[in-house]
Amino acid sequence: MSWQPEKIREWLDTAVWREPNEPRSKGRMWTVRLMRLAIVLARDLASGQITLRAMGLVYTTLLAIVPLLALSFSVLKAFGVYNQIRPMLLGFLEPLGEQSVEITARTIQFIENVNVGVLGSVGLALLFYTAVSLVHKIEEALNFIWHISRARGIGERFSRYLSALLVGPVLVFSAIGITATATRISVIRDAMEVEAIGWAVGQAGQLTPYLLVIAAFTFIYVFIPNTRVRFGPALAGGVVGGILWQSAGWAFATFVASSTNYAAIYSGFAILILFMLWLYLSWLILLFGASVSFYVQHQEYLEARGGELSLSSRMRERLALMIMGLIARRHREGLVPWTVDTLSQTLRMPVRMVDALLSELQTHGFLAPTADEPTGWLPVREPARVSAKDILDAVRITGEDRYLNPEVLPASEAIESLIRRCDEATTAACGDVSVEKLGGD
Image 1 (cartoon, rainbow, N blue to C red):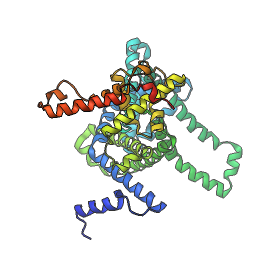
Image 2 (cartoon, rainbow, N blue to C red; image 1 turned 180 degrees about the horizontal axis):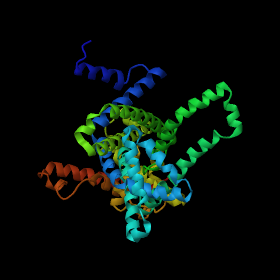
Image 3 (cartoon, one colour; image 1 turned 30 degrees about the horizontal axis):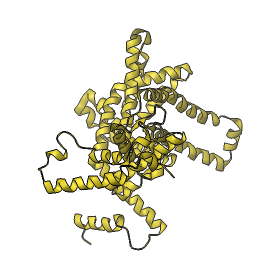
Image 4 (cartoon, rainbow, N blue to C red; image 1 turned 45 degrees about the vertical axis):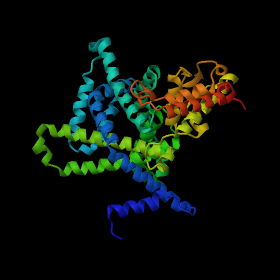
């Protein structure tokens, strides 16, 4: 077999994407899924969108790292463990080799020089804003990967971001402290003297850095995106991202140690360049793990070869009617409003498509979001006064504007007559069917 590009594409289409006439075995089915996942992830990386967002996060990190660590420093100082921030920063920058010590020392010096009394209220507000902006950028990048266009409200965003910035460091250092303290308990220390147990504890100690990074990545994938991410897919992304991050750290450290020409070429800028490269690689791995989480949770995108799923006109109309019927029925029964996630699960449709239709129905004045968390949806008008024809018309005209509408097309009496007859037939068939009836049993 000659490995020409056309032959490779033909083989992949047959072995990976095309459904066989006979059912696959369980082992082969998992192999095909993993191959699809690998191909789609590689295609996403090649498209450049993830890399662009990783670059943007590098820039935001450079601006926000001192305010972010200053907030963490103040919280840890209140708990008396602020001295732990230096080894944590050294651990993150370890792949930079000897340069990590200098960067850590300078960063800690900047943090210690932050004087809240001198900053004043405006300066303190800017400090918080700069730190929060980093988390906001992370959310935007993860929402892009999860195909979420709707952002959180300002109040919810502020509370979530601050809880992540203030409570997160305490939880991280608590976990590290518990791990260190456990090895000093006499019972555990005596048990470790047994050869088998001591070996197991030693192996677990070597895995601890991986487990901590995996836990941190999993937490980010669950907590930050503006959608419900199940724990299983988040953990899958966390495992992939954590292993890649630790492995990339080892590879980057080897690269830095063997690249003595950097200092000769870039002089004093070598530290900054290496630091930015490591930040870029770290963010790229974080976003790559988020892509893994997304495809594990939404495997229908793998069936579509990683492309954008789109609804036909018939599916959009039917889905809009079903959404309005479900919301009207729950409103009539006085139950908790539907959310985009519960609608997506009930209708077995991707969240992005349900969210897009909810936005369209909101734009046309049929639905309104609640102020609750998560956001629920309620009818704006009495469902008995809204006809199914109104909903169909709203869905059909979505996307039309001043320059893109039927009026700009060349006139055709035959087509206009046909469209009028179809419209009259639709009105006769469903003009007296209210949304309230769509939500009936």
